[in-house]
Amino acid sequence: MGQTKCNFERKQPKEDTQNRLLDAAEALFCEKGFDGVSVRELTAAAGCNVAAVNYYFGGKDKLYAEMFRRQFEMMIQQNLDIIERVMSEPSVSLEGLLRAMMELPIRRVIENETGGKVMRLLVREILNQQIDRELFARDMKGRLFERLGQAIMQLVPGIDPDKILLIVFSIDGAILHPFLFMEFYQEAMPNLSADDLLDHMVRFVAAGIRGYADPNQREGG
Amino acid sequence: MGQTKCNFERKQPKEDTQNRLLDAAEALFCEKGFDGVSVRELTAAAGCNVAAVNYYFGGKDKLYAEMFRRQFEMMIQQNLDIIERVMSEPSVSLEGLLRAMMELPIRRVIENETGGKVMRLLVREILNQQIDRELFARDMKGRLFERLGQAIMQLVPGIDPDKILLIVFSIDGAILHPFLFMEFYQEAMPNLSADDLLDHMVRFVAAGIRGYADPNQREGG
DNA sequence: GATTGTTTTATACTGTTGTTTGAAACGATT
DNA sequence: AATCGTTTCAAACAACAGTATAAAACAATC
Figure 1 (cartoon, protein in one colour):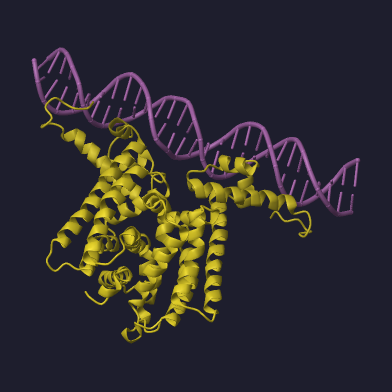
Figure 2 (spheres, rainbow over the protein chains, first blue to last red):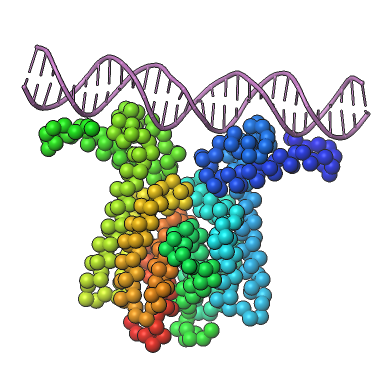
């Protein structure tokens, strides 16, 4: 359906409006949520006809899902890349890993970039239970959390393997909170810089993790 | 408007449907969100006519706001009461305070009570920016967080007062995460009990906080 | 240049939304 | 029993939602 025979040339127009729709979806849905945006508003922003979203995606919900899938995939991969990069460094440390993982999202949300809004929307939709739970659970928990757990157990010895998932969840909670409530952070602490916040988060979370280390190793780095 | 002269008798019918509507609103909105529930569905659940919501509250949004205000007020007050109670005990400790604050919400969400759903909805709506930000900021941050910060500084000496708000926010993040993602916790760790989770959270957060203590006091309880 | 398959368009359709209306039902006071 | 204010009701309202349709515009092939 919707494929010309020569699929290397002349698919400019098709992918063009299709991508314009995806871009508009990203911007508008993140701003107002699924119900807050009408198909007409969406297509107006993309500069095409109302029927386009049905023609290309088969419905508003399908477009929503597709836009989400892409963003989500990107986010997971970025995080995995960061872990691999940091863990391959010779001077690797728990604090270094935590900072590396936290830096990108924090800076993004502070500078109010698109990536930040997408992640907020992601959480929003998980809460709204309007998103494919399987996708989230498998990709997020299965891939990212498992890898992060491995890395942390490697960095700080003596952690009970039964507890590592709880620890990873707590890290996630620490990252998510400023992400979700950045405006309250900034309202309560107008002079808070991204570096100050990062310093705090690394310090707090690292201490929390090291609380789980084998007491024999507790004092070591 | 809508008040009989003798206001001690015979306001049964009025308050009755009004409360039935608020109850239905609490249950349904928490389940499906504002847009997910129609006025007809709402009034059907409350067993009254569609016009009732406009008659009593002046609109769907006003009913929503009113139901929220009540729940929110209750939640803040409960938390403040817990802090006062714990802080007045002779055997008060940081771990004791944390456990007391975390116990109620965790048990609520694990047993899937109404209170848990309301809190999820609260976060959801803050993310959706559909709620009076002033109400949240003033009550939540202004009252609860300030009191909690005081209590913690009292319990673990040597914390830089400039950092206490960040610490309180991090505590909030630690509590919120299992709250928001309990189903993933249970899916990933089917045998996780409320006590196990509480133990972890208290341990993790307490360690994070004590990481901020004056090094001289670091070893003391 | 006619034909073909793809994309875009304007418009219509069906359903649902929140809200309004005016009359009926109710309960209590006179 | 008549009157009063209050509450409930069925029905209708206008607006907007997502989707479907059929014709037009387009680009490329033969």
